Length: 412
Image (cartoon, rainbow, N blue to C red; front, side):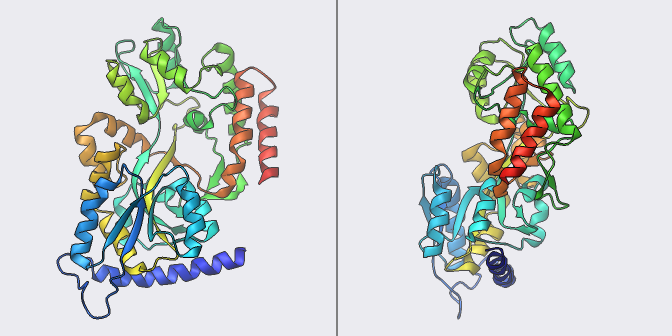
């Protein structure tokens, strides 16, 4: 299967590379010759969710006007859209373009349902973390449009100024006299490696090693290294001190923060509307370092991907690379979704009028893309269980952490 997939991707790269040469000639605006001799006017189809459709409609109309190629926007239930995409593309029934979170990319590549893209200078306009998320095995597969990550929300009436370290956060939290010095939602059954990852990375600990282009090497699981053990030791200490509580899940953490029972809440932009609605005077702070190094959260990136079986790869590539990468398109998607744009120029415009976007976006641009490799599926359970065990005060940190890493390697 490796040989076949490699051959298919190599062929896809050749095809799309040729497509982009032609697409670049057609992207200058005005009448791009869509009705010219030899032009392929076969319609292209894009799968989106209902939220994004209004933002894409004007972009699609402009593309059709300039190229003569119709864009059919089909709304899908995104709960299982990745599986539908993987199953339908080989049969010729799927779309030419799909909107998708980047952590599905590994499965798409493994199934041979997406083709790589050559973005050229277009890539330079995007946040580095966003482009890393669109990269798999050294090839770029998509155009990103939004970035999502966690930050530290602070109740300004309880703690007036931001701080840089997690020790300072805890000290301020205790001085505030609230029931909880710090809140983060954890699963009572499986911990929460996603939310705790910025604290882990501040110790220099990662899950998989990253290549020079930011992609992850599935053959190099580094979770169990010395830096990871240092984080594990801190987890047990924080659990014993009541800083982390395995019985406080996501709903309770939000409830307690809204009730003013803590000055700090580690969460994402999805909970900010409820905080604002509750009338809390809040600020979005950079993530504090617990281990002395930068705290890098996991970053989720949404983007547009090209089907490897597109019936009009030339037009579909042109649409993705030259139309969905524009500032106007990225701002339209931001307005309907509220997530910081991946395009730096669009992010700067959005951030200028929304301090929450500015804060979350600044953190996201220094974050670590969620690994999109299929091997990541073997990581979450043992990783989260190890965290939960230590927070509950069970076991020796080094033994618990290294055992989890050993079990993950065996699964991979």
